[in-house]
Image (cartoon, rainbow, N blue to C red):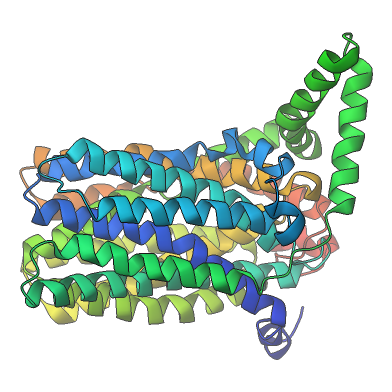
Length: 472
């Protein structure tokens, strides 16, 4: 087992700085279609139900694995030879997001809600697509046998994501509040133009992220294509096209189930789907709850975004160390239970009324448990992917997890309305939502141990040969 000092030294590697930046780029779009969009719609007079259903645009994150195979294979003309395969895709999609922000700056939600949501959907699609290649580029920064480094990289990526989301939220909320205070009527529209500058700065920083040489990956993909072509009856160009399409779409999925076995792979997907549903229900309505209970945009920026970012950074790093030392499966149990129990603090806040002390404590605990749960999740699925199809297999696992969080959470506003605005009961219900995932995790804990041992990882805190006792 590595010492704490040795484990901490891993975070100081130059690669971690690149992974941190990639995390920022990945997290920032959630500010646009999450915090900013929700408050924009609320302050324009839309109902809680409308705001909740607008969150359906996050559903595209649950399905980005469907087009991930093409992101793995298709190269962007002109840009790919100059920037690299992964970076070319990121720059292209960032340009799409920038254009959407310009379009948002010219729309009034009350007059054209469909247009606002449609543009938000385009941002979500672009963001979900860039996440495919960002995750691949992050994983490819680290060697296949560097398990401890992968755990540190997962923690660093989570810190970067939350930095982009939290500090991006501070920029959005404080800019909107400042413009509103200055008497600017369309203050949200102007805010989106300011956020466009952040997008440009992210693309400048991306140029300092190195992309590994793709020759080995391209050769392995070509070998799979040749194998499929040999089994396709149709010859000529049609047969070659069929072989390319089959190897691109089916190959990564077959590889995942072949490497892990059907029963284990299906069980893992079930756990991933259920793990963070309760947290998502609470998260979708959190800003609306804060506003209704009496907190201002500046209060939310300070406690939920600013303070939350600091606690997330600290606890994500500590969470990565803890996952290595106590074992990944144990860490997931602890994180799941703690993540659910934290929701009870928000129930107490709902019942007692506005309290800055309780609000700050709830935010700190929520960020602590969310950071711990996320870093264990990211480290786990990162070590399972086949580097031949990095983007596709990671997108598959991440999308399954996102499906549970986004599709079910879209009804969160409806649930609050059904409860008559009883926020306390709502948070109790979100606490109970973790139980199915923990039951699933308990049922497959032995299979997870065997699967990770077979992948030669050491995320249980001991060598692979000793993993069975650490995982049980």
